[in-house]
Length: 147
Length: 230
View 1 (tube, rainbow over the protein chains, first blue to last red):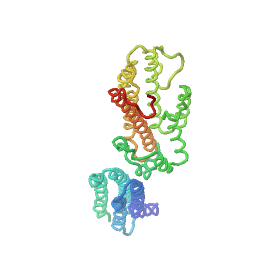
View 2 (cartoon, rainbow over the protein chains, first blue to last red; view 1 turned 180 degrees about the vertical axis):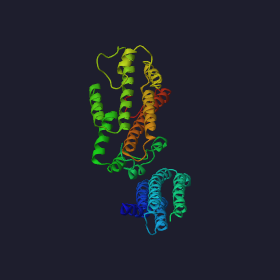
View 3 (cartoon, chains in turn yellow, cyan; view 1 turned 120 degrees about the vertical axis):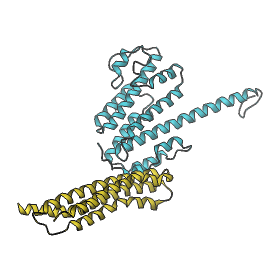
View 4 (spheres, rainbow over the protein chains, first blue to last red; view 1 turned 30 degrees about the horizontal axis):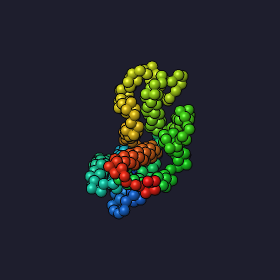
């Protein structure tokens, strides 16, 4: 039983990193496909489409930072805390990354027709980034209470 | 339900459907559209062809009758798994059924006997044959205007009205689909509407030109046109 609890602790430490990577991979892939499609239809401004499609890559960085913050000797006493904080922070990052990719894809699709809305169309993606930052910051704050 | 991110690159490579209706020149030819649609999977490509064969009049022979359309519709409804696409097909067939009933009534015919048309309203229409809009004002608010156009024998305006109704219905479905297969089908159906709209406008322009030419030539009865015998 103790080994299982310790394994959960390790899962909690690595979960933000793994789920953040999944988030960034899927999010960048979704937005990247939109930018490739938009390049076929537009005559220029390709660089900004590619730039937007890299937006979801921040989630893997948040995941790495949370992983290093949680990284410590795993004991039966702290394994539950590491598991709960790490796994839930990772899930939050994963959803934020995937949906930010979709928001970026919509922004690219809309701004290829109307370049004047380029900045405004990124607002939903920026708001989702804000939610991801909440999950990141409070994972760091709460992890300070785990012995 | 389709994968919501299945055709992101394809949809992003198409000009917005709103631009189709404001552009003087078509922003996307059928040839280019077909090239982009090559990104569809084989299964989706077949399904799109089936839906187009059902909903585009150009896919019917001149001799094709109601039975052909109903047979195609039943086959499509059997094969289509996506609820939105089924709803689109059903919507369009109900629209056609109601317009066919208006035309029959304008011709002086009574309600068709037995099974006819397709959709929820066939029996209701037959039961309310003498009512101006078959008591379908709430479900089909556009029907009154269509009936007026049929009575005034204005097929071009009727066609525009029906294309407008079909387009607005597609817009309603499109709100819930952005990058999936349904979004691609809705786009192609909108493109077909745009194509027919453009053809109708071209026909109207040609007719108007002919009328104006005849009116102008009326003032010069002695004018000999090239190739015309004196």
